[in-house]
Length: 156
Image (cartoon, rainbow, N blue to C red):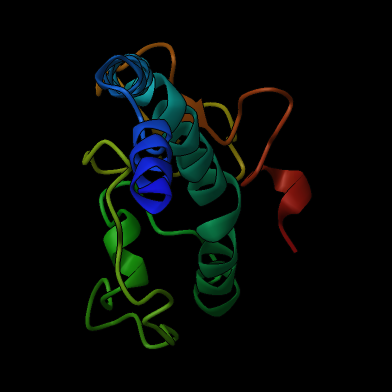
């Protein structure tokens, strides 16, 4: 009899009440709601960093290698595609491909390229139109914030 009473007491003390379970579910739902509503803001900063690195660093070496081999940067009409494919049959000094593939920016748009550049007249301008996909701010470019990648000072 004493054994049955111990079991009854111990089973009533073990586990969670329905109220405790409902409170835990409500807290998890609130946290999930906060994460979902702020997910774009959390991941958005990472996209801008990827675009900035691609513009300021990733394409710098292939463009410089192209310039060393060809004696110039790709023209605006040749574009960044000249890093993948010989721009013309008479481009005998071309030693590419200089990159494996040309990726779009993190928002799915092509990177923009101009040589000679408006901002880097002795080099090239390279930029992404950013999250809005349109010309204007907030563009991510090799001439922003004192960076002059592709300028005369960075050429050999």
